[in-house]
Picture (cartoon, rainbow, N blue to C red):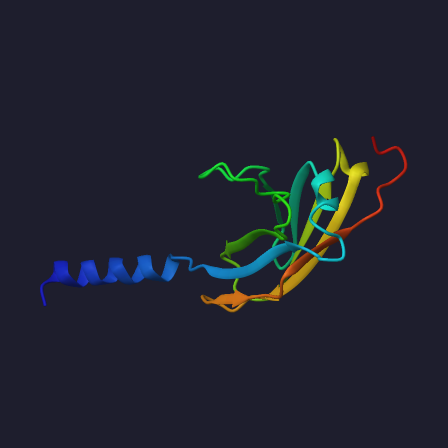
Length: 143
């Protein structure tokens, strides 16, 4: 082989060794039937807190950004909020996704909650149990 070929091969190996690969966590967020789609209409904002092997958080918009349909909460009688496909560079451990539904402004007005925990499968897609959103009594002072 030519010396340039060796250098090219060495560079490719070094680049490959430094690359991160994703692991994927997949689950469905839905309103528990005991809570009901009508009661869930009082939710005005939706947030998912990520904890355990990964620390993160994200909003679920009220309206789907691509087609403008209601997303969180969904229009009755629909109980499905969204399928979440979460990606991480973390290779192992358990990740807990906690849904928090709020009425009004601020964390004192949390009226719905649910959680699911998924074990990371390195470089694979791990499918978790449904995250069921249930009623949560807000703290005093919730407007």
